[in-house]
Image: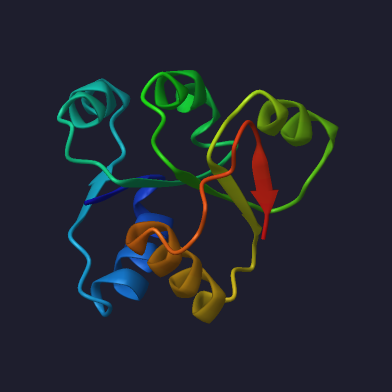
Length: 122
């Protein structure tokens, strides 16, 4: 299952792009529900944006769940955050949805090696 942690508007765009591929998707916009979803053990991939999801990166890291971060830009602050994380992939907006769906597919199918001790900017 894919968990999307983002504002409702952008979550809808991601859901539309991925439902077409047949993925089971849950969305969370309420920070009170995020821990429950993460603790369910059903999440294989998290998709969030930066800085929207930054408050949850440490919580996500505790569970070693592969995560795709969508960001408007890359700056020193984001690189600093990424350097502390494992199994993270970062894509710059506007997102090429063909590449986005391809990355999601590779992560979900295990075709993409998890980043050991780091991150990838895609």
